[in-house]
Amino acid sequence: MKFLFQLSGEHPDLPRAEIFAVLEGEGISFEGVYSRERFLVMDLDTEETDFVNRLAMTRKTARLIALSNNIRETGLKIAERISKEKTIAIRSRSHTLEEELGAELFVLGYHADLEKPDVEILCFGIDGKYLAGINIPMRRDFNSRRPQFRPFFHPTSMHPKLARVLVNLARVRKNDILLDPFCGTGGILIEAGLMGLEIMGSDIDRRMVEGCKKNLKFFDIDGKIKKADALKLWREFKEVDAIVTDPPYARSSFVTEKNIGDFYRKFLSSAFNILRHNGHLVLVVPKGYSLNTEKFDLIEEFQVRVHKSLTRKILVMKKPS
Image (cartoon, rainbow, N blue to C red):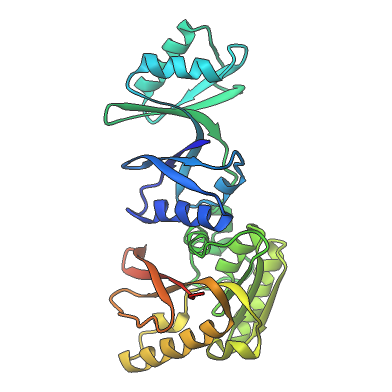
């Protein structure tokens, strides 16, 4: 089945990378059909749509009906797929396009219901092409999970949308075991737990451990959280499927180039010991820091602006088989 994705403009590369990572994690084969600006059309070997609810940097998704050259052709392709007994609503970035396609479908015998339609059609015009599809509702609510709305708050807490992206980049699926060894207030673990992963977390700071537990309980998420040294993970944890983390030490102004290098070297060795073969480590590091990934294969790298004055680097690594 062909799927249409309208991407967010929050980053030039992450929205696409997130989709590819989720499909890989879910074991869904795919082929690219069309890619322009903030739009992506892919042919997937599935008709299931639950995976779209995982996506953080995708604005809209739809089952593709038409990739056509004009409004008339678009309307005819819609008529091949949707019964005229169903009411419809056209949703687009362009009010003009909504009116033109709506008029075409009216001529073809369709009736509109803008409030409670039987079928919601997404339509976009780009580079002389028209993309149309049946909207797939996406169940997400990142704003209600922002750090300030949790029982335990810390000013360095990550926005849930970015936390969700990090989890997705780890190529995980439901029931996989994910570890955040610098869990802090639990932002990454909250997103992983809501996606049905088995979550484990640790922090060297007892206050963070207890705060993380409070936040997980607030969202009715079960997890194994403990006080532990991230440089000696094998003492507390058995094999895990993925490690996703944003070490606080990398954000500390007093950390020098020498000891931060020593810290990362020890952490990567610790993570390597408990991560399964072919498992992924997603690590956030300071912008400009050149990390020796040791035994890991570096497969992706992104720079992302956390806020106006802070840019970080996301590294996606894989433990070889």
